[in-house]
Amino acid sequence: MISLTNFFSSSNSTIIPLFEKVLSASDAGRIGRLVLPKACAEAYFPPISQPEGLPLRIQDVKGKEWVFQFRFWPNNNSRMYVLEGVTPCIQSMQLQAGDTVTFSRMDPEGKLLMGFRKASTVKITQNVFSTEPTSFSAMPENLPLMSGYSGLLQSFKGSRESSVNLSSKHFNSGDFSWYLTEKNGGRNADGAFSPSMPVSERKRSRNIGSKSKRLLIDAHDALELKLSWEELQDMLRPPLSVQPTTVTIEDQEFEEYEFYWYITDPREQEQWAQCDNCFKWRKLPADYLLPPHWTCQDNISDHSRSSCSIPDDLTPRELENLFKMDKDFKKQRSAAGQRITQAHDSSDLDSQANGISIAGDLGEPGPASVATTTKHPRHRPGCSCIVCIQPPSGKGKHNPTCTCNVCMTVKRRFKTLMMRKKKRQSEREAELGQRNQLMWSSKEETEVDSFSRPVKPEVDPSEKERSGSETLARGHSSYQLQKLPEISKSQLDLNCHPNREDTGSSHISMMSLLQQACLPLETYLRQNGLTSLVSEQQGSSGSQGLPQDTRESDLRVQEDLCLASTAQEQEKDVPKENSEPDQTGKDQ
DNA sequence: AGCCATGCACCG
DNA sequence: CGGTGCATGGCT
Image (cartoon, rainbow, N blue to C red; front, side, top):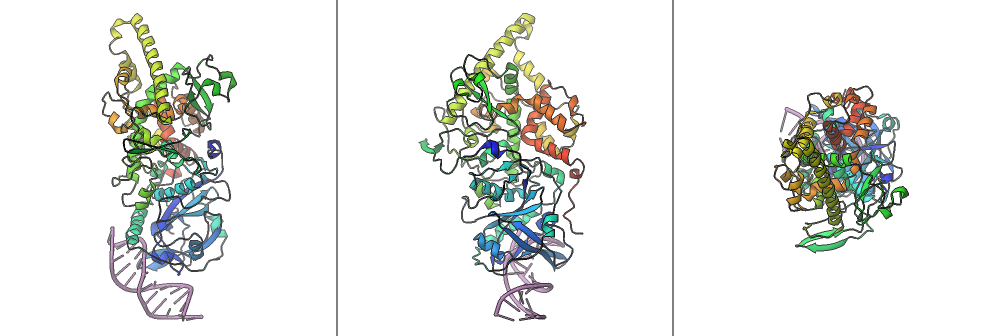
C-alpha cells in the first residue's frame, strides 16, 4: 500500500523526464543504433562537437547501468544523433519496434535513466527504478517531456508498491549535470534484436519528432509545467491486490474500493476529515486514509480531539475561506484542464492511450486532444467531475442516488458545509440587520465581490516572474462565487462538467464540493501559513508585505498551491538563468 | 528545408 | 562478412 508520507517524503533526488523515442525497426534492429531526435539529443544530452561523441551511462528501470556511445553523423548540413550499443539494453527490456523508450534524468546527480513502454499494451509494463529511492519531479522541464513523463508515470504506476518521492524542490531547469555520465566512459554493449516494425510506426515516430521540435521552448515556459494534485491522483491507484467492487448503474461501470483514496498536498502535513456524527472537522495526518465513515472517535491520531464534544478544529474563518476559494479554484482547475488537453498531442497515440494527465506547458497552443481521462471514457483530462476525481479509477456516472463511498463522503461533507454556510450567513445577516437594514439585499454578494475582485494592480514581485500563460490562468480568477441559496436549491449533479459552472448559472455541481471535500482542506485553509512560507522562501523578494488577511492574496496563494508553487521554487532557486531560454544544450 | 529511417558502400 | 560511416529518400 502506498504510504503517502513516504511517497512525499524528502528525497534528494528528482527525476526529470527528458524525452522518449518510439523505436523504429532500425533502432530495434541488430545494428544497435538508436537514432535520437536531433532536438532531444541536443537539448538533453551533453553537447558533443566531435562525431565520435562520448559515452553515456544510462540506468534502466531495473537499476542496471548501460553505457551507450552518444554520437552523431554529419548529415547534409546537419547531424544525425545516435546512441550506439543499445541492443543489449533493448534486448533486456524485451523491446521491439514500436515500443517506446523514455529518457529521464535524476537530479541533482545528473544520472540518466531510461524506461520503456510497450506499444502493444496500455497496461503497465515496467517497474520504476528500483535500486534506490527516487522521486519524480512534479514539474517536467518542458512540454516535450510530456510523453516521456507519461512513460515514467506509467512506470510509477507499475511500482505502486514502492515508495516514490514526488518533489519539485530539486528541480533545476537548465542545469545539466553531465559530469557523471561523461566521466564514466566505456562501452559494454553489443548484441542483436528482433525487429517487427509495424507500418504505422513511421508515423508515430514522426509524431515524436514533431514534438521534439518543441523541446527548445523558452525555459521560462518550462517552469510553468507542473503536475496538479488532481493529476497526481491519477497516479495513485490502490495496489493491484486491491480488487474493487464493480457495480453497474445505468449501463455504466463503477469501481468502488473499500477506502476512498485521496491524496493530500505533500506540502501539507494534515488533511481534514469530518465526523459523521457531529459534523465537526478534525485535522488528521496527511497520510491517513480516510474511510468512508469516520467519526471523532476514530481520530486516533489526536486523542484530545477524539470526541464529538470537543470543538471543531475548523474555524469559521477557515470555512469561509474555503467557500470563497471554491469558484476560483474551479476556474483554475478548468484552465489547468484545458492546458492539459492542449498539452496532449492528438497524434501521440501513446500518450492518449496512457491517459496520463499532466499539466503541461501553460501557454503553448496545441491541437485539441481527444484523450480521455483514465476515469471515464467521456471525460477529458482536467475534468473534475466526481468520476474523474475519484482516485481509484472509478468508472462511469454516479447518479444522485449513488451510495458509493465517494458519493457518500461528498454528500456528507457537502451537507455539513451547507449547514455551516447557512449558519454563518444567517449570523452575518442578523448582524448586518442591526447595523444597516439597507444592506439586506446584497449582503452576501457584496461580501463576495469584495473578495473576488480581479487581480490587484499591485502584484507580488514573484508573480511578475511568471509567464503570461499563468497570468492568463490567474486572470480567470474573476470568479463568481455561487451563493448559498442557489446551491441549496440546485440539484446535485455528480457529473457536472467543470466548465459548465463558469457560465454563471445557478447550477452547482458536486464537483466543486468534491474539490472542497476531497482535496485537503489544509490546502485551502492554511493560506496564511503558506503565504508566510512563500515569503520565507523568497527571502527579501517583497512578498512579505502582502496583507495576509487579504482574500486575493489568499486566492493567489491558492492558485500557487495548485499550479505555481513549484515554479516559485524554481524562481527562488534559479532566479536568473531560468528566465532565459536554455542554450546549454546547444552544440558548440 | 529539415528530420530521420534506412539503404549501402567501404573497410578491416 | 559484419560493422561503421555516410547517403538517400520519404515525410512533414
